[in-house]
Amino acid sequence: MIAGRLNVETGTFAVKEVPIPDPGPGFVRIKVEAAGVCLSDVHLIQGLLRPQFLKGSEVTLGHEVAGTVDLPGAGVTSVAPGDRVVVQAGYEYNGVTLTMGVDFDGGWAEYLVVPAGVLVPLGEDIPFDQASIIPDAVSTPWGAIASTADVRAGEAVGVWGIGGLGAHGVQLLRLVGAAPVIAVDPLPEARERALEFGADIALDPLAEDFADAMKAATGGRGLDVALDFAGVDAVRAQAINCLGRDGRLVLVGLSGKPMTINDSTGFSYARKQIRGHYGSEAHHVPQLVALTRLGRLDFAKSVSARIPLADAEAAVKALDAKEGNPIRLVLIP
Image: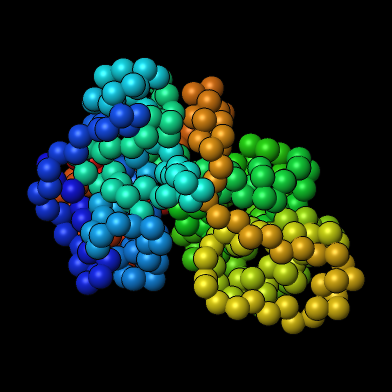
């Protein structure tokens, strides 16, 4: 079979022939039908992110995967050949969380082997390309909103960065009743997208009247929650200033850099909070699949392009360059 392989030592990425994997006891072989291309994949190739628990120097990328069960391993009775499934992006082993496409081979391949416990039944209603992006592109903002930020109906929420995560963050905030939902992005195309996905207001963070516009949008009280999907220092400083009393900033985008609070006294006086967020929890993907099957969520607009797996390298370059301002590119084996 072909697979998109990264050598983490040399930073070399290529689509190459590799053996079809066999599932051991408790594992399942999945025929991959669709796999998302995430900015984290780009960062892995660029060396900005490195696997922590990878055995060896090469890994098949891809942590957003949907497909059909091809071959259950010994002892697996929870799924059968032909079942449509979406694959959770990680699992815990000996007290360590291993991430698919990072610490073990992922879904940029024709076949994938994973533990049976990470499979979520998909049913017949959701197309594979839309289902594939639920782990991470949708579940990460969902985890940030529903768990880390604990957003409640009627709370004012600002979303910085309307890319693959932020666009879905806007859609999910609309679902839980946040109001107003305020999108913040310097790109006019991204602000337009935010409004299409359900934002009440879209602001340019570089505009001279930004502070006044944010104040007007929140009725002068400031944000209850600010979500940083950009991972940029300037975003975080701006978001903190937009928080009202008891406001909480949730860091979803990763920067790897120190953070400075300029007015620490004012921060403490207003009882503001900063909360870190990473990925999603095991129950989030099943929740999202159920919501999608019930028609509460629709990801038809989320798939910007379907690209053959053989052209994975071109897909990576297109995402890195933001060609066409994509939400999610999806590889099709």
